[in-house]
Image 1 (tube, rainbow, N blue to C red):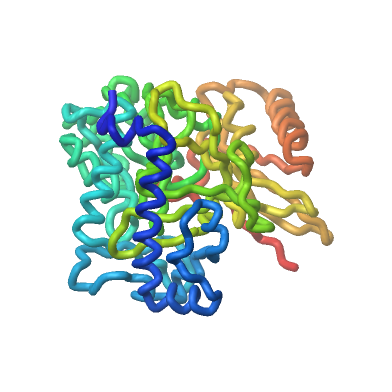
Image 2 (cartoon, rainbow, N blue to C red):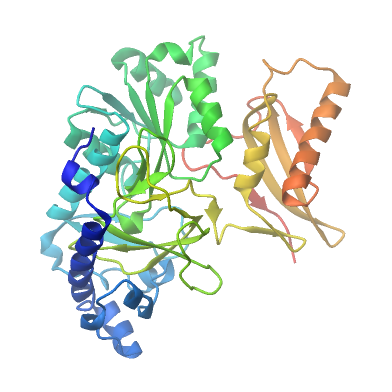
Length: 431
């Protein structure tokens, strides 16, 4: 049942003892870098005195901006001659956030991902078609090395080129796919346009990551593809995919707690919150040689699930990421998350697989305009039925987000498809 029984079922007291041992080592290494030595020196912090988890709250947070300021090597703890790989964040403005790895770091990352995949039921007999981006983005190579460690055959098809993806599926019969939710929604429609039943392809599992999505979308994807869908969480600053991963229970993502210390904080005050309370996830990497990062503010909103998991693992779980504290939309003084809107529209059968949220300012007031593709094979109504459906969506959204949106129905395929991370929100407001 377990890839590593000793680690995965370790008693909580032993997990925390291991974490503290590794934290002390990571802090000592970090304090030797130009960046952390300056920050800790200015704050008067002696890392040798950090001996409990409560003491960690004395340490300042690390942010994405700190990583940019330390660019390119201000947080690296070893000579570059001892590193074997570099990754960088995607989709940012200004300088990238760059992460370095030693050979041991890469091997440990692969072990971490293999363990996570095993917990979903993946075995060496499986074939993984990896439709995540390769290159500086961590998504593709992270699962690639983990799957190889597990013994799977890996098809490194990367993102995009849908017809080629379909051909590979038909020729090599992958049993697992790794893909963004938005591209999965697009690709399944292309498959059906080719006259192919997605269920006939033999895919059993799908690993979804790289962008937030709702439980309603997960259920829709499972039905469309005929698969079990597992949430995979990661970020380049903490290696990439595999930081947390669902097990076969599909009831929250287990954090690899022998690699990371997880905290939940109030994003406004920075104060630590108890397990079960929703807030911003903060992570400390305690098992990376080249670049341990201390108390990194992920900006991802979730909560630690206090109950034990039915799978028997003792590593704590986090819920599916709700959104990001810095991706929150403020409309007329109301806080709205795109995932809230998605949760509503993806639960409506007549809605297709693509949508856009457009923010506008009309006569000095904020407006939300949502373009929604219709699912033509399910919807066969007339104008009155369309008007009724539009009203239904508006009322459901208004009940959830308070703001009244304007819904515009679009023909299937009329919105630009996504082959990578989806751009769902377009803010056209001019103050």
